[in-house]
Length: 317
Ligand SMILES: [Zn+2]
Figure (cartoon, rainbow, N blue to C red):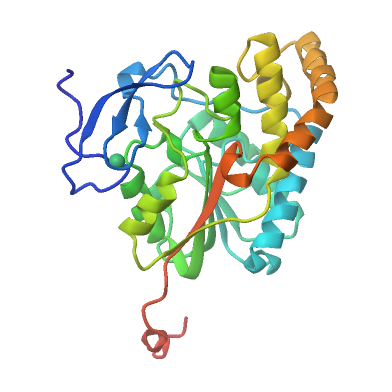
C-alpha cells in the first residue's frame, strides 16, 4: 500500500470516510485502478499516469473534419438546450485547448465567448485564433456565465467535486454547466477494451460510468442534474470509427490522432481517411442502435436552482 493514498474519495463525498480501496483490473486495458467503494469511480493514481497532457490539435487553418463534427454537435445541442438559441448568452469553454470550438461558436453568431486553458502552448494557439482565453479559474469573474462547457475535462481533474463547486460560482442565475465524459460503462470499452475511443487509458485520472450522475445528484440536492437527451452523433459516430479502426490496427486512437491531432505524415493521414470512409457506414449504424446509456460518452447538465425570485427584486440583475 502506498502512503499517499487518499483517505476520502474526491469524486463522491469529500467528508465521507469511504476512501479508495483495492485494485480493479478493467477489461483488457492492462492497468490497475483504485475503485471507490462508495461511488464505484475508477481512479488512476497520478504516479501511474502515462502522460497527463493532451497533444495540440492541427494548427494550420481549421480542419474540415473538426468543423463538420462541430456542426453535428451544435445541431444536437441547440435541439436539446433552448437557451442556446439566444445568441447573446455568455459562454465559457473550460479546457478550450487550441480554441477551435470557441472560433466555431463565434462563427455561429455568439459574441460573448471565452475559454480557459491551463497549458500555455495550447493557450497561445487559441489566442492566435483571436479568442479570449485565461489560464486559471481565479481569473474568471464570478456569476458571469450562462453556459459553461466541460468537454472531456472532468476526467483529468484530481478533485472533480471541488472543481465543479468552484465552477458553479461562475454561473449567472439560471446558468448551466454541460459536462461530457467518456463512458467507462459503454459498448466500446466493453467490446474493444484499450482501443475504445475517448477513454485514453493511462491519461485520465477518472474513469466513470453513469454512476457519476447519481453522485452529483446526492451532492448537490437542489441542483438539477440531467442527462442530455438525443444522440451526439459527433462523438458517437466518430467514436465508433476510431474504436473500430483502433481494434483493427491494434493502435489506440488511430484515426483521432491522425485526423484531429498534429501528428505529421501525409501517408498516415491518408490511411486514416480511407479507413474512416470504409468504417463510416458501420459506425453510423452502431451509433443508432446502441442505446445512449451505452454510448461512447455521457453528457449531462448541472443547473443550480435559484433560491428565491424575491432575492433579485432589489437588484438590477
Ligand atoms: Zn467515490
